[in-house]
Length: 450
Picture 1 (cartoon, rainbow, N blue to C red):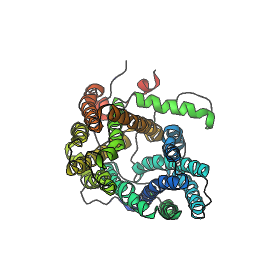
Picture 2 (cartoon, helix red, strand yellow):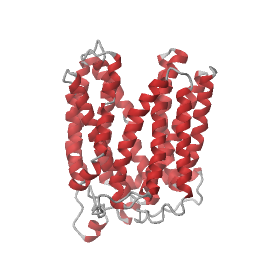
Picture 3 (cartoon, rainbow, N blue to C red):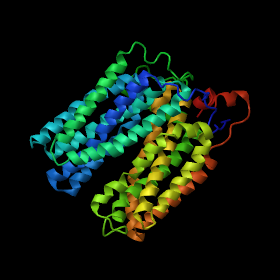
């Protein structure tokens, strides 16, 4: 008989001193990741603007946008298998080495005026594909760099830094450089090179992971199958990760809440320019759009400063129970027809989402076995990221039929309902007993019995 899994297992002892250092390996890793995130921010703004300048076609801009996002749907699941089969550090290293020359070559061709549209679209896909492997490997590597009680703090530091780099500083720098063909790509290539230097420094440390390995949980048993680790066995490995995910009610619930919130957020951000810029309801000039769009990053950076403390003080269940419904209320508040209301609501949404991300990431990193982490995490991220295009489409349909304000109100209602109801419906308390209280993961029998 299948036994349910409780939502938030007993966390590792978090009584570590507040000033305890996260350690040199983490700091090197953080610098490398943030340099890459800053490059991402520059690149993500430069690329669509370059596509527009080369072609003047909205269709080409759309094709580039699809190419930049498609790898998250097409490659994230096999990427999870690769990261689990190989060392996360090795995956980050080779993917970063492949990404760097791609960005450099695109920049050189753009600067020389020799960049065809097909090469731009192809390059956008390949660079995003390498970024998929880098990001997934980085999430798998972090638990090996800090002790369990420091995971929330490490994730909070990374989340706030990544928000500042990828959503604020990077896009701002990319906008400044966009008018100079190829310069934005050159800057991004230099930043990616800095990330590679950071990885090299981390790799050369005498034993960067030896005393910081947090994952001591045993891996799930592997079902008998064909020998070998080639492409033919990837399907089996993917099924193994998906089977573990299916038996974790807590992960299913977190994914459902995050996916619903992402649908609402994608609809909101897609229709936000129509609401903000004249002749939209707020009637602001187009230059003000950047300020409003930066509000989630401002809130996210501020939330990152306190996210670990709040998680330690109130626990994961309380954080989810408060923040998830609050996201819905704030999205609905954007419908108030004043610029300060839109900025404040989006800033709070950004802060709430960072708090939820820190809670979710720390929970996954501390409860999923090392040997399965990348595959299970890839299933989780495939679900929550794959719904964003759906949200963008629904936002357009709702706005066309009922008006732009209806997007914020309906999206807010959807996020509010999901945040309030899904945890109660999908999370079930585990039976009392020392075996389940000590280890809330599925038993071997549950994992191997379909």
